[in-house]
Amino acid sequence: MALLFLGACASGPTPVSPEAPEANQGSSRVPTPTLPTDPRVSPAVSPVDSLLDEARALRESGDLSASFARLERALRIAPQRAEVYLELARSHVAAGRPERASANAERGLLYCSSSTCTKLRKFIEL
Image (cartoon, rainbow, N blue to C red; front, side):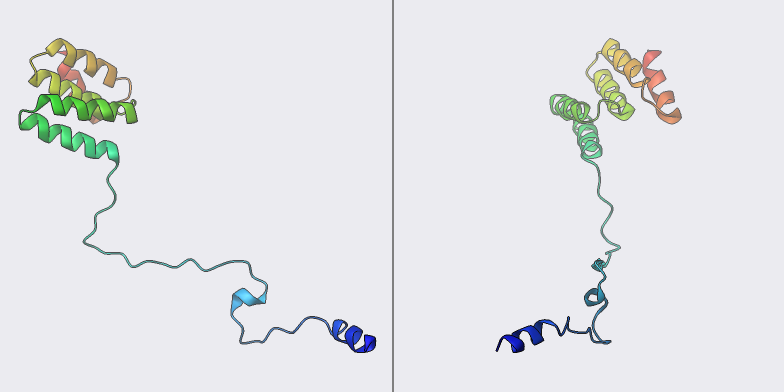
């Protein structure tokens, strides 16, 4: 009986069938499924961009307090986004505080690109 047991162990591993999938032939790669894309779905919008959009809409509707709340939150998330300082400047002008608008515009100039810089400079010249 011991010979039968040893004989079974000596036979080696079971050969892999040629029809076996690639994953069974020693490959450790697992194929990544691709999901169909829906052309009606737009790419994800960043939380800061959403907050800026909300702040603009609130400012335009006259709710400056809620607009500033959104902008302060955006500033905590992205303190180096010039667009946040630009919207803060616009909201301060709408609130009748040009000196605060100018201060925010100056801060935004530290982080701006060419088009945003031009817009921010307009608030410094108030």
